[in-house]
Length: 79
Figure 1 (tube, helix red, strand yellow):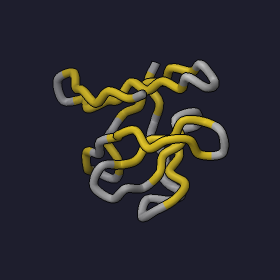
Figure 2: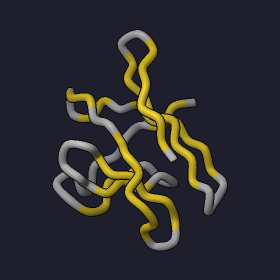
Figure 3: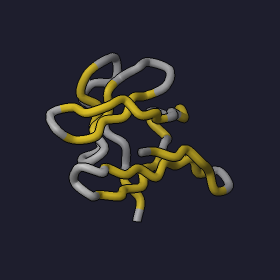
């Protein structure tokens, strides 16, 4: 449901939700630091990921952290 990679200096994740059939790429730079996303499970019926270091739950479909240390922060989606 998520792949962490980089192109040059740009760390990014390509994410996919098999429930709502969305594929979204996100810039993994947050507050001057690089984060990484891993699969978490379902959250309110859609796929959720979690930030590797803090375990904060990230909603794949809208790019925001919803439970944990990074709650309220967002990752910028990429084209």
